[in-house]
Length: 296
Ligand SMILES: NCc1[nH]cc(CCC(=O)O)c1CC(=O)O
Image 1 (cartoon, rainbow, N blue to C red):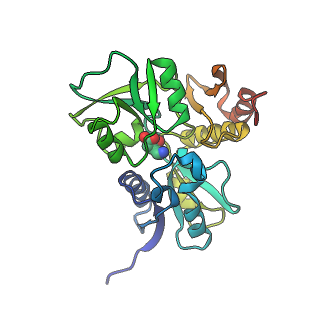
Image 2: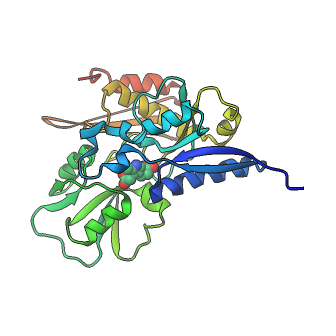
Image 3: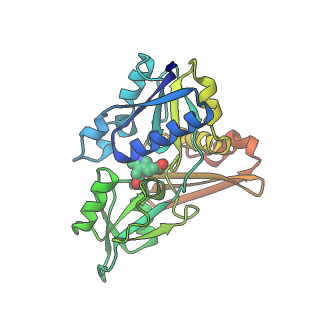
């Protein structure tokens, strides 16, 4: 007899990176619960349809999320798999982050075409992210130009010569198996200096607060990644940053302590702060490190 397995439906964007990430979540679930089948449900978002304008002009991070929240609330999917850094500060009522997968490399990478000479003057760097723009201009002699689209599109534009270099998340490149691409050179920018976006490198599963699959999400949750994500989201919320501001925040445990580093672009340059303390105190640390910066 062919006993039907119980199905858990995971919503995902259709981009190759999103699909790869959703497969990672599906695999984690099926490994922990062999009696379950995780089915991927591709969903097209506004953020995927509008590619000629910066994200900040049409709703920021929410542009990738609202279609998922409707599908979750209407019960068409059981979980939504997101790049945590693309999630808005506030989730729809009744929805929670049910799981964070173990964090991949959180840092950013400066990508150039191997063998192509770089200019003597300023490096033209493709990136639409204000966080990346201000930090690369501080770190290098660089000017920036808008770049959007999925990772492949961005690499194609670099290859075609629209930019001297582009900035991408290490996590996405790794998950796509692109870090070994012989056509490009990849320079990792240390995440404790070139501060990533909150949640960068973390895959999060959003679900209804009350669902029959809560134990499933709890079983695949990585507590360290979840704590970092919670701390970084608290910082972003206190800054009221959305993704319109040049804000980076990175948190991690090291030698038994929990550390939070943040950067914020201001008229007078980049403001940087950091704080350390006990991992259980991450909420208080997130509050303390943003003291006086709240909703400026
Ligand atoms: N905004 C797009 C996006 N969202 C998440 C990632 C990378 C994967 C991750 O951070 O987990 C990327 C691509 C990039 O910034 O290069």
